[in-house]
Length: 260
Image (cartoon, rainbow, N blue to C red; front, side):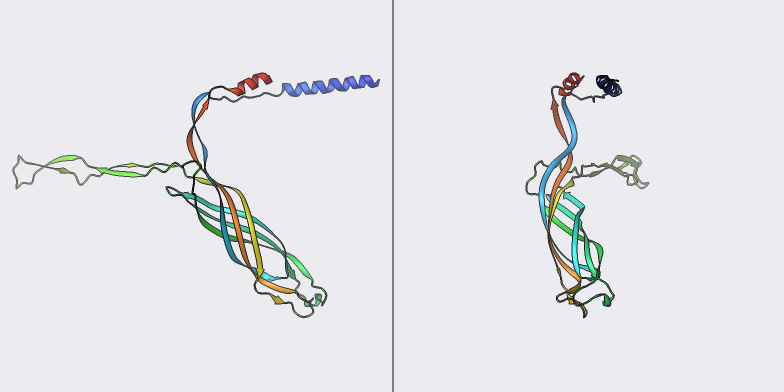
């Protein structure tokens, strides 16, 4: 078989495969409403960066020779806008995974020029909380509708006691009946999204002690660390609201017809 004939066969094979793939593909185009539409969507109320100062003591389960690495993750447990105020309550934890070197308990493994140690890991949650003030809303929140309860009575007539004339009637409300109207509104609760976090920290050992004899000069052990941390949280506060969306033409239909 000549090289030209082989190339033609390969080209035909590729073309047939491509056509089969296209024939098995069925596009589904969504129905789009046109006109003035009322939609219920998440609306951004505010976007802010909250700065939280943290001071904590971390106690290790064993003596530490040296901290090798610290990995941090922010866990947000509460972010609540307290309507009808502009106060934002924030709570959470900074998860810290600390990798450190701990000296081997066998003193014979140490010398004046070396220290034998093992690499360990310790994970701890550092709590934080803060109350921030939203000074300016990008979109005003929908204030909650208040619950209302009202009581009402019906007029009744009863015969008067025997001591009174039979022609007289007692007109009053019936105390054996109770009537009430209650209205309960189910409001949309604002919520938050964590956009980013920035942590600046300073860890310092507060109970340093020298190693036992036969250890290099200047090496110390510690079990407690004082941590000072500045945490910047960038948050987005949202609330589901009804908004009006206007659409005069369906531009997607033109694109679909063109593609076909």
